[in-house]
Amino acid sequence: MTETPPVFELLPGADRSPVILHVPHSSREVPADVRPGIVLSDAELERELDHMTDSHTAELAGRAAARAGLTPWRFVNRVSRLVADPERFPDEREEMAAVGMGAVYTRTSHGEELRPEDMDPAPLIERYFRPYARAMTEAVADRLAATGRAVIVDVHSYPTEPLPYELHGEGPRPPVCLGTDGFHTPPGLLAAAREAFAPWETGLDSPFGGTYVPLDFYGTRSEVGALMVEIRRDTYMTEPGGPAGPGLSRLAGSLAALVDAVSD
Image 1 (tube, rainbow, N blue to C red):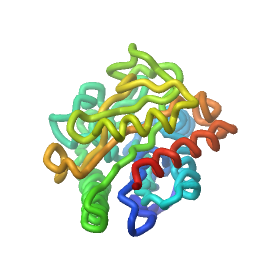
Image 2 (cartoon, rainbow, N blue to C red):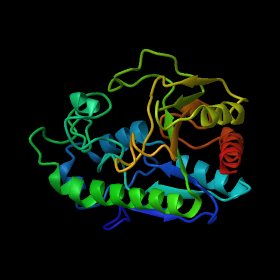
Image 3 (cartoon, rainbow, N blue to C red):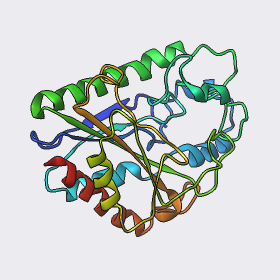
């Protein structure tokens, strides 16, 4: 844990690239001044981080960027989702609030107390959530201005066995799940993803669906394409929070192929 970790990092790509690899859940960092608000012991917190961190996805995106013909941009969260989750709605629109996992979590992956139910989430939202959202909005706007379009590829992972917090964990759990949006995921983007990840079985929107698009563009700017790539963890790492294996390199090649396919 560090005193003042950066909230996020935008890693530049090629000026002509419309692609942003978005990595929101790869970090385990919990700032020292945030830690006292979490009621878990240190050992319990480490275990929760094992379950909830999309381990090695920042490395996956980095390897893919290095292998792509036209280097994509990368927007990487540098603090844990247990601090604030940038992909949640910060209000009543968020369905995960029903299990204590809105923008600021109060419950763990197993339904136990993470923070007191009556805690005020506003300080964490103002310090972490809103600056992240503004910066991601600016990154997308910059790609639109430079290339006339933007393609957000959300890079996630998920456990082989469903965790209790999952609202839709009863469905298929393929090696690669492609999350889509009816407005922002055009057929060509989905087809490119299916081809790029052809070495693995792919599925749609199960166990997780949807995409991340900054609200300034959501449902209004069709020039912003988006796709979520959810990779089942047993394909590339030892679960729940162990080291990466050889599958990481193969998946990076597929992700690079997707970047190349949608960069033209």
